[in-house]
Length: 267
Image (tube, rainbow, N blue to C red):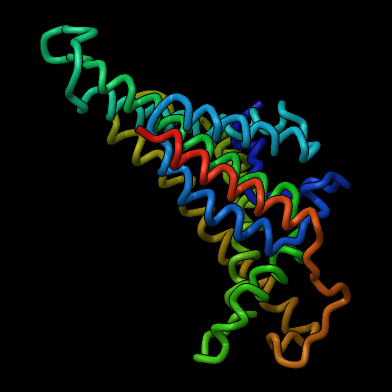
């Protein structure tokens, strides 16, 4: 099965776990702060703490770990490529491998491992947000967080709707790309043979149908919203009002403890 058929970013898995029941605003704030906090880690203990916290969140979400692993496969190449660059270009410490033009230093290995872990932690944490938050709740949460900006003319509702639609269409575009690749291969196209330039030219046969399909879907969505009388956020009411609960304050408390621990364990 192609890796493109298993994207998880933007998907929502219904459930009744503690993460599912949390307020979307609390989860959005947590993810935003976590993406900053992860840069405080600079040694084995701090990264170990972040890994434990992230794995705990995965277990609490009730999302199958195999599903998460399959969804991460498409980005493993990017992570490996980024780590490889740091492995090759970072100098310092003892020389571990010396093959003439290719030399690996101790600091390069440490930096590569840390970059790979940081990338994985950011992706998994961001993915947990979409896996445990429905698109409607995500839109409402974003709108509530951005609502103070409406006083200076920022269209909070429209911005939140755009972000949620973009996230929602990520799995759709991945599936469409997978279908196009299979269709082109059935017609004899090859994306794995030949030089770099030939492969790049081959991907034009994927990009053009993908762009056409994306514009068509966007137009159909606009027609559907217009047919239903969508007029933006003016005068709209909510079926379910968002309210913070003890779970949300517990989440922020855990994040506070993690921040304090990271500051104390840094060297």
